[in-house]
Image (cartoon, rainbow, N blue to C red; front, side, top):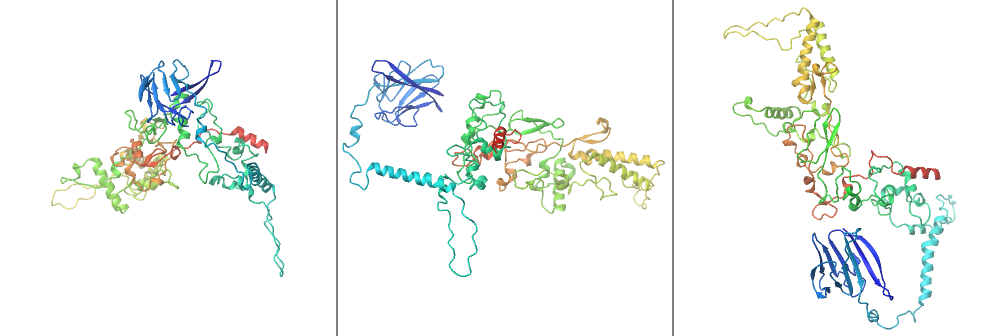
Amino acid sequence: MRCKVRYLSRQRSGGVTHSDQTIKVEGQRIKLGRGTDCQVYLKDLRASFHHAEIVVRDFDVVIEAVDDSALMVDGVPVERAVITPESEIEVGPYRVQLVPGEPDADLTVSVELVSPPPSDTVDKLIEPRRIGLEGGLLRKRPLSWALFLLLIVVGLALPIVAHRSPAPESTMSVPPASGPEPAHSAAPFAGFDRIWISGDLSSSHRLLSEQCGACHEAPFIPVREEACAACHRDTQHHFETAEFAFAGFEATECMDCHSEHQGPAGVIPARQELCADCHRDLRREAPETELVDAADFGTDHPEFRPSVITEPDSGQITRVALGAPEFPKEVSNLRFPHDVHLAERCEVPATGQQDMSLEARQGCNVLRMAQQRMSQDGLDCGDCHQPEPGGVNMLPVRMQDHCALCHRLEFDQNAPDRVLPHGQPEEVIAVVNDYYIARAALDRPLALESPTTIRQRPGDGAAPAQAEAVAPDPLGEAQRVADQKLEAVFGRSLCGVCHEIVPPADSALGQWEVRPVEVAALWMPKARFSHAAHETTPCTDCHRAHDSSTSADVLMPTIADCRECHQGEHAATALPSTCIMCHVYHRDELPPMLPLAAEAAAAVR
Protein backbone atom coordinates (compact mmCIF):
# COMPACT_ATOMS: atom_id res chain seq x y z
CA MET A 1 0.00 0.00 0.00
CA ARG A 2 1.30 3.46 -0.94
CA CYS A 3 0.82 6.11 1.76
CA LYS A 4 1.58 9.82 1.38
CA VAL A 5 2.36 11.83 4.54
CA ARG A 6 1.93 15.63 4.19
CA TYR A 7 3.67 17.63 6.93
CA LEU A 8 2.12 21.13 7.32
CA SER A 9 3.95 24.19 8.69
CA ARG A 10 2.37 27.58 9.38
CA GLN A 11 4.41 30.73 8.71
CA ARG A 12 4.27 33.98 10.68
CA SER A 13 2.49 35.61 7.78
CA GLY A 14 -0.33 33.11 8.11
CA GLY A 15 0.53 31.04 5.05
CA VAL A 16 0.87 27.26 5.09
CA THR A 17 3.69 25.29 3.52
CA HIS A 18 3.91 21.54 3.25
CA SER A 19 6.35 18.78 2.35
CA ASP A 20 5.19 15.38 1.07
CA GLN A 21 6.75 12.00 1.77
CA THR A 22 5.52 8.87 -0.03
CA ILE A 23 6.20 5.54 1.66
CA LYS A 24 5.38 1.93 0.87
CA VAL A 25 3.61 0.14 3.71
CA GLU A 26 3.59 -3.65 4.05
CA GLY A 27 0.12 -4.71 5.15
CA GLN A 28 -2.77 -2.47 6.15
CA ARG A 29 -1.40 -0.76 9.33
CA ILE A 30 0.33 2.64 9.47
CA LYS A 31 2.26 3.46 12.64
CA LEU A 32 2.31 6.99 14.12
CA GLY A 33 4.88 7.98 16.73
CA ARG A 34 8.37 9.15 17.63
CA GLY A 35 10.02 5.79 16.93
CA THR A 36 12.19 5.41 13.84
CA ASP A 37 10.11 2.43 12.70
CA CYS A 38 6.94 4.54 12.43
CA GLN A 39 5.75 5.47 8.95
CA VAL A 40 4.25 8.79 10.24
CA TYR A 41 7.10 10.32 12.23
CA LEU A 42 6.14 12.66 15.13
CA LYS A 43 9.36 14.12 16.52
CA ASP A 44 7.90 16.06 19.46
CA LEU A 45 8.91 14.65 22.85
CA ARG A 46 5.25 14.66 23.94
CA ALA A 47 4.47 11.95 21.39
CA SER A 48 5.11 8.31 22.38
CA PHE A 49 7.53 6.14 20.46
CA HIS A 50 4.53 4.14 19.19
CA HIS A 51 1.57 6.43 19.77
CA ALA A 52 -1.23 5.20 17.48
CA GLU A 53 -2.02 3.12 14.39
CA ILE A 54 -4.22 3.79 11.37
CA VAL A 55 -5.83 0.58 10.05
CA VAL A 56 -7.09 0.59 6.44
CA ARG A 57 -9.94 -1.90 6.05
CA ASP A 58 -12.06 -2.85 3.07
CA PHE A 59 -14.82 -0.30 3.70
CA ASP A 60 -13.49 2.14 6.31
CA VAL A 61 -10.44 3.52 8.11
CA VAL A 62 -9.89 3.10 11.87
CA ILE A 63 -7.44 4.79 14.25
CA GLU A 64 -6.34 3.01 17.43
CA ALA A 65 -4.36 4.29 20.44
CA VAL A 66 -1.40 2.17 21.52
CA ASP A 67 -1.14 1.42 25.24
CA ASP A 68 -2.09 4.55 27.25
CA SER A 69 -1.28 7.15 24.59
CA ALA A 70 -3.52 10.21 24.39
CA LEU A 71 -5.85 10.14 21.38
CA MET A 72 -8.83 12.39 20.66
CA VAL A 73 -11.27 12.30 17.72
CA ASP A 74 -13.55 15.33 17.23
CA GLY A 75 -12.66 16.55 20.74
CA VAL A 76 -13.58 13.25 22.48
CA PRO A 77 -10.90 11.02 24.11
CA VAL A 78 -11.06 7.57 22.47
CA GLU A 79 -9.08 4.37 22.30
CA ARG A 80 -10.43 3.36 18.89
CA ALA A 81 -12.64 5.12 16.35
CA VAL A 82 -13.67 5.08 12.68
CA ILE A 83 -12.36 8.21 10.94
CA THR A 84 -13.25 10.11 7.77
CA PRO A 85 -11.70 13.12 5.98
CA GLU A 86 -13.98 15.34 8.13
CA SER A 87 -12.66 13.90 11.42
CA GLU A 88 -10.30 16.05 13.54
CA ILE A 89 -7.76 13.76 15.17
CA GLU A 90 -5.42 14.86 17.93
CA VAL A 91 -2.37 12.65 18.41
CA GLY A 92 -0.54 14.24 21.30
CA PRO A 93 0.35 17.80 20.21
CA TYR A 94 -0.38 17.01 16.51
CA ARG A 95 -3.50 17.34 14.39
CA VAL A 96 -3.88 14.47 11.91
CA GLN A 97 -6.45 14.38 9.08
CA LEU A 98 -7.20 12.19 6.08
CA VAL A 99 -6.80 13.96 2.73
CA PRO A 100 -9.09 12.59 -0.01
CA GLY A 101 -8.59 12.47 -3.74
CA GLU A 102 -4.82 11.95 -4.08
CA PRO A 103 -4.31 9.98 -7.33
CA ASP A 104 -0.75 8.79 -6.65
CA ALA A 105 -1.39 7.25 -3.22
CA ASP A 106 -3.80 4.77 -1.64
CA LEU A 107 -4.04 6.93 1.49
CA THR A 108 -2.92 10.52 2.24
CA VAL A 109 -2.48 11.81 5.80
CA SER A 110 -1.79 15.44 6.79
CA VAL A 111 0.19 16.13 10.00
CA GLU A 112 0.45 19.55 11.73
CA LEU A 113 2.01 20.50 15.05
CA VAL A 114 -0.72 22.63 16.66
CA SER A 115 0.64 22.84 20.23
CA PRO A 116 4.27 24.05 20.21
CA PRO A 117 6.41 22.84 23.12
CA PRO A 118 7.17 25.29 25.99
CA SER A 119 10.51 27.04 25.69
CA ASP A 120 11.83 25.48 28.88
CA THR A 121 10.91 21.87 28.04
CA VAL A 122 14.40 20.73 27.05
CA ASP A 123 16.19 22.87 29.67
CA LYS A 124 14.41 21.04 32.47
CA LEU A 125 15.90 17.72 31.27
CA ILE A 126 19.49 18.87 31.93
CA GLU A 127 20.82 20.17 35.23
CA PRO A 128 21.72 23.87 34.69
CA ARG A 129 25.42 23.68 35.44
CA ARG A 130 28.47 23.68 33.19
CA ILE A 131 30.28 20.43 32.48
CA GLY A 132 33.86 20.72 31.18
CA LEU A 133 37.38 19.32 31.28
CA GLU A 134 38.88 22.22 33.25
CA GLY A 135 41.24 21.05 35.91
CA GLY A 136 42.18 17.92 33.99
CA LEU A 137 45.38 17.05 32.20
CA LEU A 138 44.26 18.57 28.90
CA ARG A 139 41.66 20.98 27.77
CA LYS A 140 38.97 19.95 25.29
CA ARG A 141 40.43 21.50 22.18
CA PRO A 142 44.04 20.27 22.54
CA LEU A 143 42.82 16.79 23.40
CA SER A 144 40.50 16.74 20.38
CA TRP A 145 43.30 17.87 18.06
CA ALA A 146 45.69 15.31 19.52
CA LEU A 147 43.24 12.47 18.97
CA PHE A 148 42.48 13.71 15.46
CA LEU A 149 46.18 13.85 14.52
CA LEU A 150 46.75 10.38 16.02
CA LEU A 151 43.92 9.04 13.91
CA ILE A 152 45.37 10.66 10.76
CA VAL A 153 48.84 9.23 11.42
CA VAL A 154 47.78 5.69 12.37
CA GLY A 155 44.82 5.36 10.04
CA LEU A 156 46.06 7.21 6.97
CA ALA A 157 49.73 8.25 6.92
CA LEU A 158 51.32 5.01 8.16
CA PRO A 159 49.15 2.76 5.90
CA ILE A 160 50.11 4.90 2.88
CA VAL A 161 53.83 4.67 3.77
CA ALA A 162 53.52 0.92 4.34
CA HIS A 163 51.72 0.45 1.03
CA ARG A 164 54.38 2.35 -0.92
CA SER A 165 57.38 0.86 0.91
CA PRO A 166 59.31 -1.86 -0.95
CA ALA A 167 58.79 -5.40 0.25
CA PRO A 168 61.55 -6.77 2.54
CA GLU A 169 64.20 -8.98 1.03
CA SER A 170 63.18 -12.63 1.23
CA THR A 171 66.75 -13.89 1.09
CA MET A 172 69.81 -13.05 3.15
CA SER A 173 73.51 -13.77 2.78
CA VAL A 174 75.11 -16.72 4.48
CA PRO A 175 76.67 -15.62 7.82
CA PRO A 176 80.39 -16.02 8.29
CA ALA A 177 81.77 -19.07 10.04
CA SER A 178 82.62 -17.09 13.14
CA GLY A 179 81.33 -13.90 14.69
CA PRO A 180 77.83 -12.63 15.42
CA GLU A 181 74.98 -13.06 12.94
CA PRO A 182 74.26 -9.95 10.90
CA ALA A 183 71.12 -8.06 11.78
CA HIS A 184 68.57 -8.16 8.95
CA SER A 185 65.93 -5.44 8.94
CA ALA A 186 62.37 -5.55 7.74
CA ALA A 187 60.29 -2.67 6.46
CA PRO A 188 59.62 -0.50 9.55
CA PHE A 189 55.96 0.11 8.68
CA ALA A 190 55.12 -3.31 7.25
CA GLY A 191 51.62 -4.38 8.07
CA PHE A 192 50.16 -0.95 8.80
CA ASP A 193 48.28 -0.98 5.49
CA ARG A 194 46.21 -3.92 6.77
CA ILE A 195 44.37 -1.47 9.03
CA TRP A 196 42.21 -0.62 6.03
CA ILE A 197 41.07 -4.23 5.55
CA SER A 198 37.48 -4.43 6.78
CA GLY A 199 37.34 -8.24 7.01
CA ASP A 200 38.52 -11.56 5.60
CA LEU A 201 38.17 -12.24 1.89
CA SER A 202 35.95 -15.02 0.61
CA SER A 203 37.45 -18.39 -0.27
CA SER A 204 37.15 -17.74 -4.01
CA HIS A 205 39.06 -14.43 -3.76
CA ARG A 206 41.66 -15.50 -1.21
CA LEU A 207 44.40 -15.53 -3.87
CA LEU A 208 43.97 -11.73 -4.12
CA SER A 209 44.63 -11.12 -0.43
CA GLU A 210 47.95 -9.40 -1.22
CA GLN A 211 46.71 -7.66 -4.38
CA CYS A 212 44.17 -5.11 -3.20
CA GLY A 213 44.66 -3.05 -6.36
CA ALA A 214 43.16 -5.83 -8.48
CA CYS A 215 39.71 -4.76 -7.28
CA HIS A 216 40.29 -1.38 -5.60
CA GLU A 217 41.73 0.40 -8.62
CA ALA A 218 41.73 3.88 -7.08
CA PRO A 219 41.69 5.11 -3.47
CA PHE A 220 38.31 5.97 -1.97
CA ILE A 221 36.43 4.82 -5.09
CA PRO A 222 34.06 1.82 -4.88
CA VAL A 223 34.89 -1.31 -6.87
CA ARG A 224 33.76 -0.85 -10.49
CA GLU A 225 32.24 -3.33 -12.92
CA GLU A 226 35.40 -3.24 -15.03
CA ALA A 227 37.41 -4.67 -12.13
CA CYS A 228 34.98 -7.58 -11.79
CA ALA A 229 34.89 -8.13 -15.56
CA ALA A 230 38.66 -8.62 -15.68
CA CYS A 231 38.12 -12.11 -14.22
CA HIS A 232 34.37 -12.66 -14.61
CA ARG A 233 33.80 -11.59 -18.19
CA ASP A 234 31.98 -14.84 -19.05
CA THR A 235 29.57 -14.71 -16.11
CA GLN A 236 26.06 -15.07 -17.50
CA HIS A 237 22.95 -12.97 -17.00
CA HIS A 238 20.11 -13.97 -14.71
CA PHE A 239 17.22 -13.13 -17.04
CA GLU A 240 16.38 -11.96 -20.54
CA THR A 241 17.05 -8.24 -20.25
CA ALA A 242 14.75 -7.38 -23.16
CA GLU A 243 11.81 -9.25 -21.59
CA PHE A 244 12.33 -7.99 -18.03
CA ALA A 245 13.30 -4.35 -18.51
CA PHE A 246 12.53 -3.21 -14.97
CA ALA A 247 12.49 0.52 -14.44
CA GLY A 248 15.54 1.53 -12.45
CA PHE A 249 16.98 -2.01 -12.29
CA GLU A 250 20.64 -2.20 -13.30
CA ALA A 251 21.26 -5.73 -14.49
CA THR A 252 25.06 -5.42 -14.43
CA GLU A 253 25.71 -3.99 -10.96
CA CYS A 254 27.68 -6.75 -9.24
CA MET A 255 27.80 -4.88 -5.93
CA ASP A 256 24.01 -4.90 -5.67
CA CYS A 257 24.18 -8.53 -4.59
CA HIS A 258 27.82 -9.38 -3.86
CA SER A 259 29.80 -7.88 -0.97
CA GLU A 260 33.34 -8.86 -0.05
CA HIS A 261 35.27 -8.96 3.23
CA GLN A 262 32.46 -10.88 4.90
CA GLY A 263 34.34 -14.10 5.59
CA PRO A 264 34.92 -17.33 3.60
CA ALA A 265 31.37 -17.52 2.20
CA GLY A 266 30.41 -13.88 2.41
CA VAL A 267 30.61 -13.06 -1.29
CA ILE A 268 27.74 -15.45 -2.07
CA PRO A 269 24.45 -13.60 -1.49
CA ALA A 270 22.29 -15.76 0.75
CA ARG A 271 19.53 -13.41 1.90
CA GLN A 272 16.11 -14.41 0.67
CA GLU A 273 15.00 -10.79 0.30
CA LEU A 274 17.47 -10.21 -2.56
CA CYS A 275 15.41 -12.60 -4.70
CA ALA A 276 12.01 -11.78 -3.24
CA ASP A 277 12.35 -8.09 -4.11
CA CYS A 278 11.60 -8.96 -7.74
CA HIS A 279 10.04 -12.43 -7.60
CA ARG A 280 7.23 -11.71 -5.14
CA ASP A 281 5.36 -9.63 -7.77
CA LEU A 282 6.81 -10.27 -11.24
CA ARG A 283 3.64 -9.45 -13.13
CA ARG A 284 3.73 -5.88 -11.88
CA GLU A 285 6.79 -5.22 -14.05
CA ALA A 286 6.35 -7.96 -16.68
CA PRO A 287 2.61 -8.69 -17.12
CA GLU A 288 3.19 -11.21 -19.92
CA THR A 289 5.62 -13.45 -18.04
CA GLU A 290 4.79 -17.12 -17.45
CA LEU A 291 6.87 -17.23 -14.27
CA VAL A 292 5.00 -17.69 -11.02
CA ASP A 293 5.53 -15.39 -8.04
CA ALA A 294 7.57 -16.72 -5.10
CA ALA A 295 8.86 -15.04 -1.95
CA ASP A 296 9.34 -17.71 0.75
CA PHE A 297 9.70 -21.47 0.35
CA GLY A 298 7.71 -22.23 3.47
CA THR A 299 4.75 -19.91 2.89
CA ASP A 300 4.81 -18.34 -0.56
CA HIS A 301 6.15 -20.72 -3.21
CA PRO A 302 4.25 -22.39 -6.08
CA GLU A 303 3.93 -26.14 -6.52
CA PHE A 304 6.79 -27.72 -8.46
CA ARG A 305 6.35 -27.67 -12.25
CA PRO A 306 8.58 -30.36 -13.76
CA SER A 307 9.53 -30.42 -17.44
CA VAL A 308 7.77 -33.45 -18.93
CA ILE A 309 8.33 -34.79 -22.46
CA THR A 310 4.87 -35.18 -23.96
CA GLU A 311 5.86 -35.68 -27.62
CA PRO A 312 9.24 -37.44 -27.79
CA ASP A 313 9.57 -37.43 -31.57
CA SER A 314 9.31 -33.63 -31.61
CA GLY A 315 10.91 -32.99 -28.23
CA GLN A 316 7.83 -31.14 -26.94
CA ILE A 317 8.28 -30.10 -23.30
CA THR A 318 5.30 -29.34 -21.05
CA ARG A 319 5.49 -27.70 -17.60
CA VAL A 320 2.47 -28.24 -15.36
CA ALA A 321 2.22 -28.15 -11.58
CA LEU A 322 2.36 -31.54 -9.85
CA GLY A 323 -1.06 -32.81 -8.89
CA ALA A 324 -2.91 -30.52 -11.29
CA PRO A 325 -5.90 -32.14 -13.11
CA GLU A 326 -4.23 -31.51 -16.47
CA PHE A 327 -0.86 -32.92 -15.39
CA PRO A 328 0.41 -34.97 -18.38
CA LYS A 329 1.98 -38.38 -18.60
CA GLU A 330 5.60 -38.60 -19.72
CA VAL A 331 5.73 -40.18 -23.18
CA SER A 332 9.23 -41.63 -23.32
CA ASN A 333 8.74 -44.63 -25.67
CA LEU A 334 9.78 -46.82 -22.75
CA ARG A 335 7.84 -49.48 -20.82
CA PHE A 336 9.02 -49.99 -17.26
CA PRO A 337 6.86 -50.99 -14.27
CA HIS A 338 8.59 -49.93 -11.05
CA ASP A 339 6.18 -51.90 -8.89
CA VAL A 340 7.12 -55.17 -10.59
CA HIS A 341 10.86 -54.61 -10.15
CA LEU A 342 10.45 -53.57 -6.52
CA ALA A 343 8.30 -56.58 -5.56
CA GLU A 344 9.03 -57.64 -1.99
CA ARG A 345 7.44 -61.11 -1.91
CA CYS A 346 5.91 -63.74 -4.16
CA GLU A 347 2.68 -65.39 -3.06
CA VAL A 348 1.56 -68.22 -5.34
CA PRO A 349 -2.07 -69.30 -4.80
CA ALA A 350 -2.86 -72.91 -4.01
CA THR A 351 -4.25 -73.39 -7.50
CA GLY A 352 -0.88 -72.52 -9.05
CA GLN A 353 0.63 -69.75 -11.11
CA GLN A 354 -2.11 -69.99 -13.74
CA ASP A 355 -4.37 -67.97 -11.42
CA MET A 356 -1.81 -65.22 -10.87
CA SER A 357 -1.95 -61.90 -12.68
CA LEU A 358 0.74 -61.02 -15.20
CA GLU A 359 2.24 -58.41 -12.85
CA ALA A 360 2.39 -60.92 -9.98
CA ARG A 361 4.14 -63.51 -12.16
CA GLN A 362 6.62 -60.89 -13.35
CA GLY A 363 7.29 -59.86 -9.75
CA CYS A 364 8.00 -63.49 -8.85
CA ASN A 365 10.43 -63.73 -11.77
CA VAL A 366 12.25 -60.59 -10.60
CA LEU A 367 12.62 -62.00 -7.09
CA ARG A 368 13.82 -65.35 -8.43
CA MET A 369 16.46 -63.75 -10.67
CA ALA A 370 17.63 -61.43 -7.89
CA GLN A 371 18.14 -64.45 -5.63
CA GLN A 372 19.88 -66.53 -8.29
CA ARG A 373 21.98 -63.96 -10.14
CA MET A 374 22.52 -61.21 -7.58
CA SER A 375 22.46 -63.24 -4.34
CA GLN A 376 20.00 -60.86 -2.69
CA ASP A 377 16.38 -61.03 -1.61
CA GLY A 378 15.12 -58.53 -4.16
CA LEU A 379 15.86 -55.31 -6.02
CA ASP A 380 15.99 -51.85 -4.53
CA CYS A 381 16.38 -48.38 -6.06
CA GLY A 382 20.15 -48.32 -5.68
CA ASP A 383 20.59 -51.36 -7.94
CA CYS A 384 19.78 -49.18 -10.96
CA HIS A 385 19.77 -45.54 -9.83
CA GLN A 386 23.25 -44.49 -8.75
CA PRO A 387 24.49 -40.94 -8.04
CA GLU A 388 27.05 -39.27 -10.24
CA PRO A 389 30.45 -38.26 -8.78
CA GLY A 390 29.74 -35.54 -6.26
CA GLY A 391 26.24 -36.86 -5.60
CA VAL A 392 24.25 -34.00 -7.14
CA ASN A 393 22.36 -35.77 -9.93
CA MET A 394 21.86 -39.41 -10.86
CA LEU A 395 23.73 -41.32 -13.55
CA PRO A 396 21.68 -42.59 -16.53
CA VAL A 397 20.30 -46.12 -16.30
CA ARG A 398 22.02 -48.18 -19.00
CA MET A 399 21.14 -51.57 -20.38
CA GLN A 400 24.68 -52.98 -20.22
CA ASP A 401 25.27 -51.78 -16.65
CA HIS A 402 21.94 -52.37 -14.94
CA CYS A 403 19.59 -54.53 -17.01
CA ALA A 404 21.70 -57.06 -18.91
CA LEU A 405 22.31 -59.28 -15.89
CA CYS A 406 18.64 -60.33 -15.90
CA HIS A 407 17.55 -59.32 -19.40
CA ARG A 408 20.03 -61.16 -21.61
CA LEU A 409 19.40 -60.57 -25.31
CA GLU A 410 19.65 -64.25 -26.35
CA PHE A 411 17.80 -65.10 -29.55
CA ASP A 412 18.54 -68.76 -30.27
CA GLN A 413 18.60 -71.68 -27.82
CA ASN A 414 21.33 -73.40 -29.84
CA ALA A 415 23.67 -70.43 -29.17
CA PRO A 416 23.05 -69.35 -25.55
CA ASP A 417 26.27 -67.31 -25.47
CA ARG A 418 25.31 -65.33 -28.54
CA VAL A 419 23.57 -62.07 -27.52
CA LEU A 420 22.27 -59.24 -29.65
CA PRO A 421 23.71 -55.71 -29.48
CA HIS A 422 21.51 -53.25 -27.60
CA GLY A 423 20.44 -49.96 -29.07
CA GLN A 424 21.36 -50.73 -32.71
CA PRO A 425 18.35 -52.16 -34.61
CA GLU A 426 20.33 -52.30 -37.87
CA GLU A 427 23.01 -54.44 -36.23
CA VAL A 428 20.37 -56.71 -34.68
CA ILE A 429 18.88 -57.36 -38.12
CA ALA A 430 22.34 -58.00 -39.58
CA VAL A 431 23.36 -60.37 -36.74
CA VAL A 432 20.18 -62.47 -37.02
CA ASN A 433 20.36 -62.69 -40.83
CA ASP A 434 24.06 -63.57 -40.82
CA TYR A 435 23.59 -66.19 -38.10
CA TYR A 436 20.88 -68.17 -39.91
CA ILE A 437 22.41 -67.80 -43.38
CA ALA A 438 25.70 -69.09 -41.96
CA ARG A 439 23.90 -72.08 -40.41
CA ALA A 440 22.28 -72.85 -43.75
CA ALA A 441 25.64 -72.66 -45.48
CA LEU A 442 27.03 -75.16 -42.95
CA ASP A 443 24.05 -77.53 -43.42
CA ARG A 444 22.86 -77.09 -39.84
CA PRO A 445 19.15 -77.45 -38.97
CA LEU A 446 17.15 -74.24 -39.14
CA ALA A 447 14.04 -75.27 -37.16
CA LEU A 448 12.86 -72.55 -34.83
CA GLU A 449 11.82 -75.09 -32.18
CA SER A 450 13.64 -78.17 -30.88
CA PRO A 451 12.93 -81.48 -32.70
CA THR A 452 9.61 -82.96 -31.65
CA THR A 453 8.61 -86.59 -31.12
CA ILE A 454 5.49 -88.47 -32.27
CA ARG A 455 3.13 -89.11 -29.32
CA GLN A 456 2.80 -92.93 -28.69
CA ARG A 457 0.23 -94.97 -26.85
CA PRO A 458 1.11 -96.08 -23.28
CA GLY A 459 3.26 -99.23 -23.33
CA ASP A 460 4.83 -98.60 -26.71
CA GLY A 461 8.52 -98.10 -27.06
CA ALA A 462 10.21 -94.80 -27.48
CA ALA A 463 9.18 -93.02 -30.61
CA PRO A 464 11.86 -92.29 -33.15
CA ALA A 465 12.80 -88.67 -33.66
CA GLN A 466 10.88 -86.93 -36.36
CA ALA A 467 12.97 -86.55 -39.42
CA GLU A 468 13.71 -83.00 -40.43
CA ALA A 469 12.64 -82.01 -43.85
CA VAL A 470 15.42 -81.00 -46.13
CA ALA A 471 14.71 -77.60 -47.59
CA PRO A 472 15.07 -77.50 -51.38
CA ASP A 473 16.29 -73.89 -51.08
CA PRO A 474 18.59 -73.58 -48.03
CA LEU A 475 19.23 -69.85 -48.41
CA GLY A 476 15.55 -69.08 -48.93
CA GLU A 477 14.63 -71.19 -45.92
CA ALA A 478 17.33 -69.42 -43.88
CA GLN A 479 15.86 -66.04 -44.79
CA ARG A 480 12.36 -67.24 -43.83
CA VAL A 481 13.61 -68.47 -40.44
CA ALA A 482 15.53 -65.20 -39.89
CA ASP A 483 12.42 -63.15 -40.66
CA GLN A 484 10.41 -65.22 -38.18
CA LYS A 485 13.10 -64.78 -35.55
CA LEU A 486 13.26 -60.99 -36.15
CA GLU A 487 9.50 -60.79 -35.70
CA ALA A 488 9.87 -62.57 -32.36
CA VAL A 489 12.91 -60.51 -31.29
CA PHE A 490 11.29 -57.15 -32.03
CA GLY A 491 7.96 -58.37 -30.68
CA ARG A 492 7.07 -58.92 -27.04
CA SER A 493 9.81 -61.53 -26.44
CA LEU A 494 12.82 -59.16 -26.36
CA CYS A 495 12.82 -55.56 -27.64
CA GLY A 496 9.07 -55.08 -27.39
CA VAL A 497 9.10 -55.85 -23.67
CA CYS A 498 10.56 -52.43 -22.90
CA HIS A 499 10.42 -50.41 -26.14
CA GLU A 500 7.91 -49.06 -28.63
CA ILE A 501 8.44 -50.89 -31.92
CA VAL A 502 7.73 -49.79 -35.50
CA PRO A 503 7.08 -52.82 -37.78
CA PRO A 504 8.44 -52.83 -41.35
CA ALA A 505 4.97 -52.13 -42.78
CA ASP A 506 4.84 -48.81 -40.90
CA SER A 507 8.52 -47.91 -41.25
CA ALA A 508 9.79 -45.41 -43.78
CA LEU A 509 12.89 -47.60 -44.13
CA GLY A 510 10.89 -50.77 -44.64
CA GLN A 511 12.50 -52.57 -41.69
CA TRP A 512 12.09 -53.04 -37.95
CA GLU A 513 12.68 -49.87 -35.92
CA VAL A 514 12.84 -49.06 -32.22
CA ARG A 515 11.51 -45.67 -31.23
CA PRO A 516 14.27 -43.76 -29.42
CA VAL A 517 13.90 -43.42 -25.67
CA GLU A 518 13.58 -39.77 -24.62
CA VAL A 519 13.55 -39.30 -20.87
CA ALA A 520 13.91 -35.87 -19.31
CA ALA A 521 17.43 -35.66 -17.90
CA LEU A 522 16.24 -33.15 -15.29
CA TRP A 523 12.65 -32.56 -14.31
CA MET A 524 13.61 -29.17 -12.84
CA PRO A 525 16.39 -27.79 -15.08
CA LYS A 526 16.24 -24.33 -13.47
CA ALA A 527 16.72 -25.72 -9.98
CA ARG A 528 19.35 -27.86 -8.33
CA PHE A 529 18.99 -30.77 -5.95
CA SER A 530 21.76 -32.71 -4.24
CA HIS A 531 21.01 -36.39 -3.73
CA ALA A 532 24.19 -36.66 -1.65
CA ALA A 533 22.71 -34.28 0.92
CA HIS A 534 19.72 -36.62 1.27
CA GLU A 535 21.53 -39.97 1.23
CA THR A 536 20.30 -40.85 4.72
CA THR A 537 16.68 -40.60 3.55
CA PRO A 538 15.22 -43.72 1.89
CA CYS A 539 14.44 -43.13 -1.79
CA THR A 540 10.84 -44.29 -1.41
CA ASP A 541 10.14 -41.59 1.20
CA CYS A 542 10.14 -39.08 -1.67
CA HIS A 543 9.62 -41.20 -4.81
CA ARG A 544 6.46 -43.34 -4.74
CA ALA A 545 7.95 -46.03 -6.98
CA HIS A 546 6.19 -49.00 -5.33
CA ASP A 547 2.84 -47.70 -6.56
CA SER A 548 3.91 -47.00 -10.16
CA SER A 549 3.08 -49.52 -12.86
CA THR A 550 4.14 -47.45 -15.87
CA SER A 551 7.12 -45.35 -16.87
CA ALA A 552 4.70 -42.55 -17.80
CA ASP A 553 4.42 -41.64 -14.10
CA VAL A 554 6.52 -38.66 -12.98
CA LEU A 555 7.79 -39.91 -9.63
CA MET A 556 8.84 -36.54 -8.28
CA PRO A 557 8.03 -35.42 -4.71
CA THR A 558 5.63 -32.52 -4.24
CA ILE A 559 6.44 -29.33 -2.41
CA ALA A 560 4.50 -30.66 0.61
CA ASP A 561 7.00 -33.54 0.86
CA CYS A 562 9.93 -31.12 0.88
CA ARG A 563 8.27 -28.82 3.41
CA GLU A 564 8.29 -31.61 5.97
CA CYS A 565 11.99 -30.75 6.44
CA HIS A 566 12.52 -27.42 4.64
CA GLN A 567 10.91 -24.08 5.44
CA GLY A 568 11.69 -20.46 4.64
CA GLU A 569 14.61 -18.34 5.76
CA HIS A 570 13.20 -17.63 9.20
CA ALA A 571 11.96 -21.15 10.04
CA ALA A 572 12.29 -22.13 13.69
CA THR A 573 11.10 -25.75 13.65
CA ALA A 574 12.54 -26.88 10.30
CA LEU A 575 15.65 -26.41 8.19
CA PRO A 576 15.86 -22.73 7.10
CA SER A 577 16.02 -22.76 3.30
CA THR A 578 16.68 -19.66 1.22
CA CYS A 579 16.30 -19.29 -2.53
CA ILE A 580 19.93 -20.03 -3.38
CA MET A 581 19.69 -23.47 -1.76
CA CYS A 582 17.85 -24.69 -4.87
CA HIS A 583 18.31 -21.94 -7.47
CA VAL A 584 21.28 -20.29 -9.15
CA TYR A 585 21.45 -16.66 -10.18
CA HIS A 586 23.75 -16.74 -13.22
CA ARG A 587 22.24 -19.06 -15.83
CA ASP A 588 24.47 -20.93 -18.28
CA GLU A 589 22.10 -20.58 -21.25
CA LEU A 590 22.10 -16.76 -21.18
CA PRO A 591 24.68 -14.36 -22.68
CA PRO A 592 27.53 -12.80 -20.65
CA MET A 593 26.55 -10.19 -18.12
CA LEU A 594 29.57 -7.88 -18.43
CA PRO A 595 30.80 -7.97 -22.06
CA LEU A 596 31.18 -4.18 -22.40
CA ALA A 597 32.85 -3.85 -19.02
CA ALA A 598 35.29 -6.62 -19.98
CA GLU A 599 36.19 -4.84 -23.22
CA ALA A 600 36.75 -1.59 -21.31
CA ALA A 601 38.99 -3.34 -18.79
CA ALA A 602 41.01 -4.98 -21.56
CA ALA A 603 41.46 -1.63 -23.33
CA VAL A 604 42.83 -0.04 -20.15
CA ARG A 605 45.36 -2.83 -19.76
